[in-house]
Image 1 (cartoon, rainbow, N blue to C red):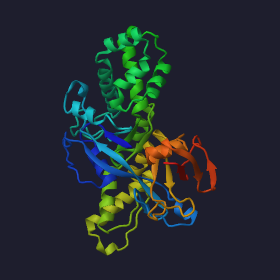
Image 2 (image 1 turned 90 degrees about the vertical axis):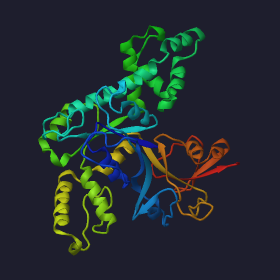
Image 3 (image 1 turned 180 degrees about the vertical axis):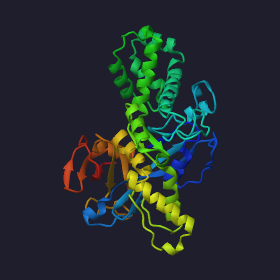
Image 4 (image 1 turned 90 degrees about the horizontal axis):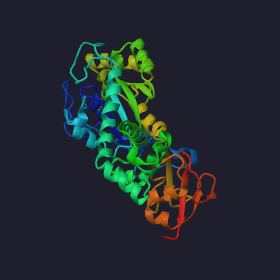
Length: 397
């Protein structure tokens, strides 16, 4: 599972990325600081099932912090996008190619309006961030359109002459973008296009590209630098932008908190509404003043909201749930005795057999039954799993 971090240059994408991962990346106040994609690991919070089940978790593929399980999710920070990137302008071709396998996108923009369309610093409020939303979606749509149109005449004629469903042929063509037959079917059904793909117009093909982008790479907006924007400006932006979830974000503040926590100056759990200062005497005057400012903005927005964005993408936009497979349904362990060892992200609606395949293909192929370890009830292969389920898979593999 991978979340792409996108936006024009110099809006705080790399700051957001480092704040989410604490990976060392180059951050500067000029366009195209990021040349190659930064790849890292963020974490999603969810309740750890251990306390509820009377055991102490010893995870392998995730972390435990108090009663919270931190489940890893891949993050991808790509080069900044400028207008006409799909034509190769700026680092556009590289940017778009890096996004191929992203499951969902976070559009980082400067809601304070202090960066122009090219990513250059301007006076605060001089640029309308609504324009950023429109241009970025347009660039990705044109990128999708360009890929679809490669050899489209040959593809559509072959579909008609061989009576091969165009949805299957399109899905095969676009599999590198993470597009499935289900995605294509959903969009084609919505557009109600003529049954003869050779007759589809270029406008209809662009609608197809837009639809496929929306279903295969859903996007939400992180309105960064919210601490530098007045409340009414943020609300005007919310009112002007339709069709997206929007969360105000202070990525610089989150990065400062994580660094301070790592240095032992504060105690902070990512996503919390505040932080503790165990020994104020360790702080210099400027550090104390900076933390006071961060505390004020956290009161204003509820938190820095960096963690909130990641979890909104995963749980709301991508409809993911966390499920815990175990090998011993009584001790809740794996073969080595690790308690509740693994946490897997699955699409909402996934079944017990889907989980089996997620763990190992042999488990899926030779599935016999499963056990819901909370209720000790036997469940079948098509049983729909819930967020937080603890499951034992039985197979004859």
